[in-house]
Length: 427
Image 1 (spheres, rainbow, N blue to C red):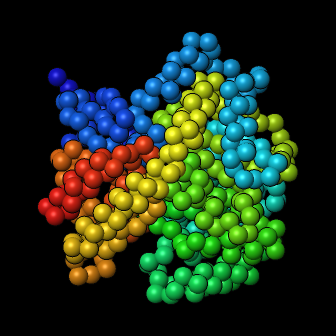
Image 2 (cartoon, rainbow, N blue to C red; image 1 turned 90 degrees about the vertical axis):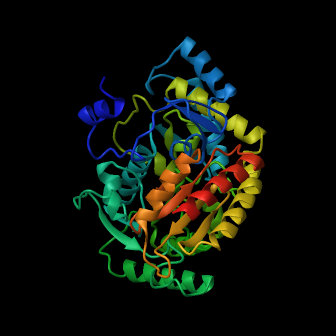
């Protein structure tokens, strides 16, 4: 009998990566746990790449999906869509962007693609600023602005991209500076880059915390300082909140709020967690920017009644149960526990993050050299112990990524930390 893995390899592209030497088929989940086809139970600390935001099989979401599917599954944006309008109203209010408009897509990639389309059209420029070590999706335009070579398969792009320092605090030429000096140096770098451009620049797109890049982030206030420079030039700021949105960082509902001194971004992109597994992405922008598109445009699947029903139910649960506060409390305990573990393991260079968005960077002991082999080994060992985690990082994928559903309990956090401790020691 042919295995599912063999069948996968026969029809799915080679570049669609699978975790683990013996890939796992996840069959079902509940709360913060999932089960594989062999009946093994795992504590899920990755949530389908930060997408199962509240919990697996959340009754409120499954009920909303089932009830909406029993009425109508699809209509497109050519018709009035009550669930889409209701979710857009809530997101517009939560975004912090004045006079906001919301356009729904089916993924974070498509959301960032749309934001780039809006920015370049509004500014009449194909020049874009992005952060080093960044990742914004897998479309042709998103790959063209990605500052992480492992996820950038082509140098061809419709955009001219200029990369700015600042997304990684503890590596690079400014790593040894104080936070204030770091921000000052990065602003000087931004000013220098703008002095080399010809004509207008459309936008800066930046993840408040870099996801694929290994959960790295600048000091609070960097993007506020950038915004002051950008505003003088009329350049838009796009906050890529695909991974940081909805309270995952604990301290803020949106990642940009750690950089709020100069006001909200001009555009905000979102996806992943809002659908709790359903395909929802989108862009929030001021009416002036959003309505500047001077051509026909619709979305066949963006704003689907079923996914919008899921989003409404999921967002309601998140807010009613203060999952942002839970991410702050339980995430704070988890990161301190992991830092204590890491302090005794020479291979752990840094434990970083906020809320339930935590990275553990691994190096070869006694050096600052990235250790992707160790990251892969810990990933395998954690799975053997009953824990699913992710990995990433701009330096040869040497960062363990930890991002459980935001309803994680203290006992589950402790259980996961114990498994990780054993996995790290074994490696």
